[in-house]
Image (cartoon, rainbow, N blue to C red; front, top):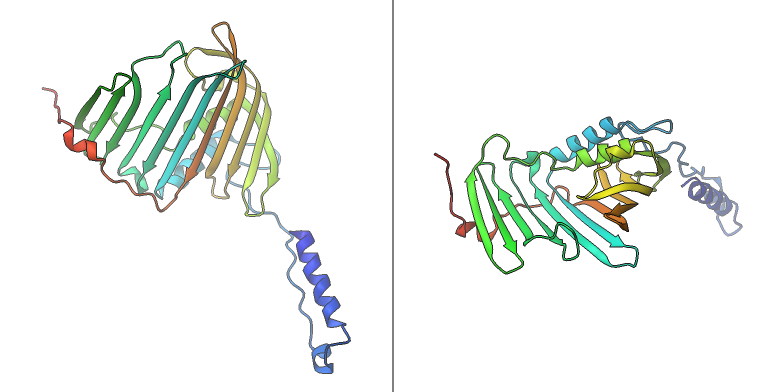
Length: 267
């Protein structure tokens, strides 16, 4: 941006001295284009000196609480020969203040130790009732609905807990300032690997790589975490990517399958 500002000023001065300009034009004062001098403000909990995981995670959560958004996650567990042992997809649409939300979790675990019958779970709540749909490999599905009680809400809708965990596990620093004002954080060394949230049966994480893109209000718009590990006796690579999109434009419609769910109550 600084180079661009200097170029604009140079062109303005050059044109002011061109012989093709009239005397009146030549006498007009030239106002140079402003040259950016300051970087974009740092997000809460971020500075050149250090990253405060809990502060940034809380800022991320607070920023998303005031708007609607879509949160998408893709995770792969890949064997040393390139075979994908487990593919997991998650998508969640959340209303402002989390008054309602819906989403799904799907997985392909054919060659994974915990491979089960359930391949996808859909869920929806309007704050009064919760409905879920479980789909199995056999094609069978089961629908459930119940009234919302304490503990029925998801505890990490914004994924802020995972953000705090990875920032506590890996030494992350400011890598660069993007032209749009976002800050990119990167890291490749563990400081407390036990804080890293890992898939079931995965152990001994090494060779970690982390990248986060953070807006000035603290929203972590993208996060990518990759590391080598072991799964039983096999060497694997785990890659997890998360993205926040459609802020302020996400809508939460009731899924059609909810109409077939039977409301159950406990006596």
